[in-house]
Length: 300
Image 1 (spheres, rainbow, N blue to C red):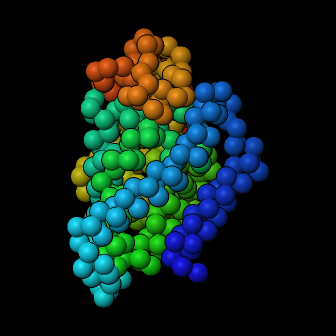
Image 2 (tube, one colour; image 1 turned 90 degrees about the horizontal axis):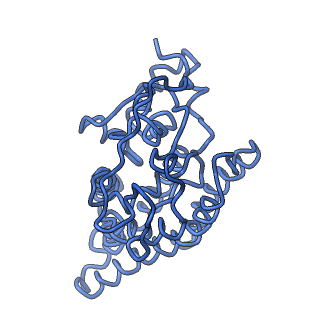
């Protein structure tokens, strides 16, 4: 099979595997998911593959126009050099893109990712259409594939997608591993290297005052190591008791189309970032008596 077919089949299989697992566990339709969530998540499932493929194709077309003699120019590089380049050009830039999206300028394009009051495979690519259209890592990845990173890029993307979906899924695969004393050293390294449910669920918490939530950090996608290096990591091995946005709890959920297509569609709801000019990221509410967080024993 050609690289594109291998990539498509692998990604569909990974996504379907997590989706079926949530369905089997009765978690694919969370109690906190409303009608607007259902419509939005279905729209994202249709939109994201088209945006992803469109950006990569456009990036490749630009390379063919601007660098017609450079197709496959880096194909002789060893795999480890290609992998290191992808981790910088794609994953590190995505860390900073994600971090920037928590500022007032970018927040309207990213708030939809946090408006879900649940964690699920449904949330993985839940972002505004423009969020992915302008993501630097996708454009750079298209250029690197043009320069000869083909098969290494396929392997890289398959691993990255598996980690990202696993970090968003309602299935907390790391929870059982934390309870095995013999695995404590391995888990200490793993949770500082890649994104896990415990670290990424904390980023989606409703509040930062529950002892777990870390709205202002844990930005990593494939590598959580970026958070460790840049001082934005918080590791508790616990899981937030609630997810979502305080302004949605107070004023009602934004319409699905507005969340997906802002600024082409704008909201007239009170206390919203989806108006014009963009509003600042809402701060997590302070809770006088936060609900108890789900936890597992820490390592020795």
